[in-house]
Image (cartoon, rainbow, N blue to C red; front, side, top):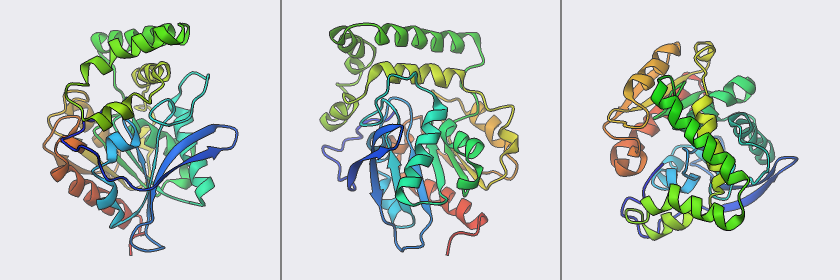
Length: 289
């Protein structure tokens, strides 16, 4: 999740609602990039964020080098609304369905935090579509200790409550769980953006993150991969990020001095590092000019 970072009203690229056949309607931001043959990157945001909350300081610098597409995940921001239980697999399939609609044959999934598992699943489920992977502030498994598993089980319980409670009760739950802790430190636009979330789905997403484990297959990744590590991360500990990095053959590491919100709180370091990480993937895949 990310904070407003002192930006009162950010300048954002064009956005639109896109119908994904058989899946639902999502919200997408797009930037053309410097040339028609610029590699396409798809930005996959973190848990409790949206594309804008995660990437608003990255959009335009990235577009100087790449075609940029950013999607709101299910239940987050203006992402797909569905009565189905949230699954990370569905988010990966949504990303590929969006690429189909936009006429994008291959792209680089760029995943931040929860977006990291989504990016990994794009490769696992649609290997022919991923040019390479960029994995930021993320890991191959988020819960292995007893305390971590209990924390995610708590989210699972809240998700069940939210699914079966009336609308007013869900609004109260949303406020208690999340927004009351954020309004004091977020800019008004960011609070408004977070208020768009469907919190039942977001809580289910927390449960899905807790259950995610790619350790049995992450070593099979065979596309160029960059790992952007947040060195003082209190949400995804550095040891977990390092474990994922070491499991991927040929992965290249990039380091940012920051906590889990480095994409906003330390954007001056994060954004240039992210550009280097993506460029490295494109160079190794021989798709950069």
